[in-house]
Length: 152
Image (tube, rainbow, N blue to C red; front, side):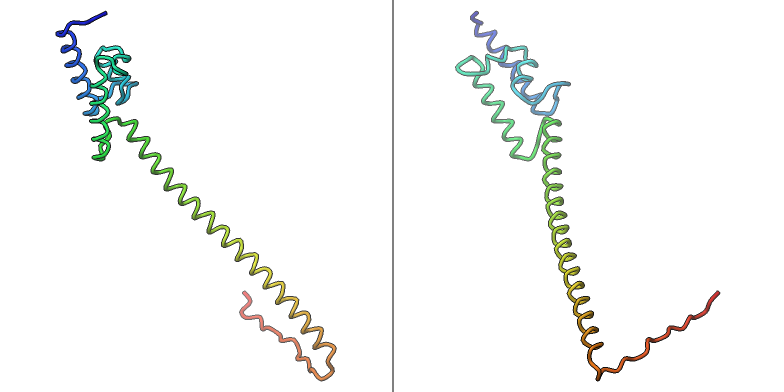
């Protein structure tokens, strides 16, 4: 069904008004800053925005204006802004988790090396004690007695 030039101008004006509202952040409940919501808010069939349909140029204009706002650091859709914020939080948490895992791995390696070193030192002490016990020229000192200080 063909529409008159006056109807087309009227529809374009409604579309531009809806476009301005969406880009200002006036997003209806359950909607987003997208073509689907633009079509619903302007009362125009969504298919009219695609291909060589009559309002395809308005879709391109809407997407260009939305992209300009996003490059300027503004996000008219609060859901999209929240999603971007959460993605940034997830990236930070992923970095912290990777650092924590690296630290845990380093500490586990240190613990393993320390235990191996203690075991080697213990074996060396036992070997030296056994060697000292077999040597008749070594004099053994008596075990020291510790004083018990201040019993209550």
